[in-house]
Length: 284
Ligand SMILES: [Fe+2]
Image (tube, rainbow, N blue to C red; front, side, top):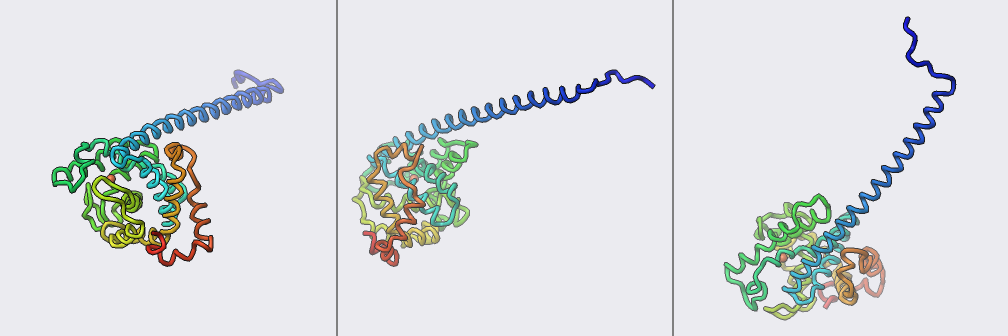
C-alpha cells in the first residue's frame, strides 16, 4: 500500500485552522466594508438623481402655477391619504417623495397651451394630455422603487375611475392605487389655487366638487377617506404652506413633519374631532 504524500505532524491541523480562520475573518470584514461603501455610493447617486428630477418637476410647476409649493403639498396629502387607506408606512413615505413628480411632463407642453387663459381646443387638449406619457418617459424605467413609483404616478394620474381618462382609458382598480390617490390630492389642491383661467375655489366648494366626482373621476373609497378626514387634511395643507421654506429639501431629505403623527394628534384632539362629522361645512 502506498504511503500518504503528506503526513500531518501533531499540531499542524490546528495551526492551519487558526490561520485560515483569521484570513476568512479579514475577508468577511473587507466584504462588509465594500458592501457598506457600495450602498452609500448608490444612495448618493439615487439622492442626486432624485434631487435633479425634483428640480425639473419644480421647473414644470413654476411654469404652471408660479409657486412650486403645489407639488410639495400633493406629496404630503398623498402620503396622508395612503396612510388613511391603510397602505404601509413605507409605501406612503415613497408616495410623498414620488407624487411631486407627477406633472414633470409639463416641461414638454408649450407655454401657449399651458398658460392659455381659457378653454383648450381639441388640438391643444391633445398636446396638454401628452404630459402624462412625457412624464413617465422622463422618469424612465428605473430599478429604484422611488422612480418606478414616480413613473407609475406620472403615467396614471389622469386616468378616471369610470374609464374615461387618459392616456390609456384604464378603469377602476386596473388604475394603480398610487395614480388614483395622487389624482384626488391633485384635484382638491389645484381647485383651491388661483389659476390663469379662474380664481381659487373655497375649500368647502372644492370638497363638494370632489364628492360629486365620487365613482366618476375618482375611486369612491379615496373620496370617502378624503371627506371623512377633510379637516385634518386641510390643516395638513395649511401646515405645509406655513413651512414651505426649504420645502424641496423636505421632499428629498427629512420631512417637514411626521404625517402619521399629525393625523393622530389632529383626530385625537377633542376640539377638532367634532367637525369630522360634517367635513364639507367645517373645512371652509
Ligand atoms: Fe397632470
